[in-house]
Length: 342
Length: 195
Image 1 (cartoon, each protein chain N blue to C red):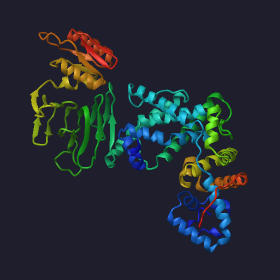
Image 2: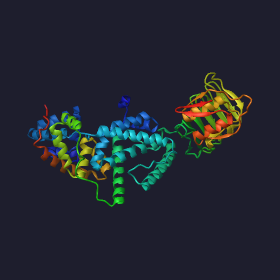
Image 3: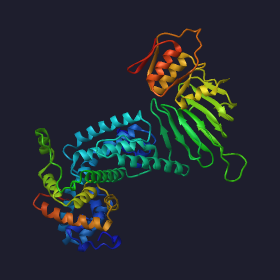
Image 4: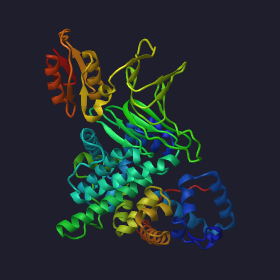
């Protein structure tokens, strides 16, 4: 019956045989023209089977999906619970599962390990797949990603990294801010030129050979080089960067400005710190907005004669605001979705 | 949300894996009612089915960047939910050393007066006959009927979800259809037009 597709003996079929035959069921449910042709022809050849076919057809048609009467309400409630958990977990480190009320802890632990293994598996597989794989952080969260070539990317809050093809060059796409520690990679062919690592952003491309640097593509675009050498490709020019160089392209001017900075100031966030040396209050405000998704209102400016230096922890917003208050001799306080500086 | 209906399952799944919250929401709302109903066919324990659905979708959200591809989302969800339900049942059984929670009955139908009214309006007597008849089937037969006829999955998918071979599924369904045919022979079947 079902198994011998090619040689079905429909003339010997019972109502049950028809009603369980995948081709017959398909035709009844879809009523495609091809099926209609076939069954019309078949019935004119075996008119005595019409009663059987009609009963089978009626039986299949009567078996339609009826949702559980409470399904709409129940699934809406489940959806709200799912969202609550997802929001809660966005604040916790990634790849840990929240204990919920049904399933015991050992099972949760097993699931978390499976999750990590799955993660590793996909990264290894990534170079051979042309489907984009991406990582995203929410506000107040940083995430360290090990790429298939063992390069390490630390993704700052509210940022997204998408992995591209890894066939000839290594390519990633960045929205937001990330610190890259790129491993040098030799070509398999023995060619002297190493495999390029390219970071694409909306504004520019960073071409890398093996180095450490920070790329930030938010309201302003900023690349800061810690070690090694990189080349920035802009639509109209290429800029070579040396360690300690910072190139900034701000929203309005669109003209890249290159200057020398302490690169650690711009990558300290990856160690859950901000270095305040040389940062203006406006820059700090912008960072809080980008990192925590809060609006910052500056009601009072700091004394221009005081030079602010030092390191503040960013493990949590409360501690950060307290440390900033002390550093700037102002009050930083959170009120709902806003941070007031006064 | 409507804009997703023109996308293939593979495209929607890739959007979801790429970080689209809209795609996530669409996938849930597209399949949740059927998934919930299916869950209750696997085990007649509503809080457990609700927890497993919650856990499944939270897991998918947390691990979306590392999930594999699929071009059959419903099949994937059914399979994942079923596995979660069975694991949860096994864990509970072991913990409480209680009996098997699988039952031969469907969950109680609507209890509030409003729901009863809605039910009376939307479900014909034929539907009631069918639900009663399907409810009375042994669990495996009932599940196979749900997957093949209510959810329109094919034999290979149904066999894979249930962890049986295709021939066994076919035999289960054949027996089930035989029973249903007898049960429904008194109910008025739909008229057929073949001309």
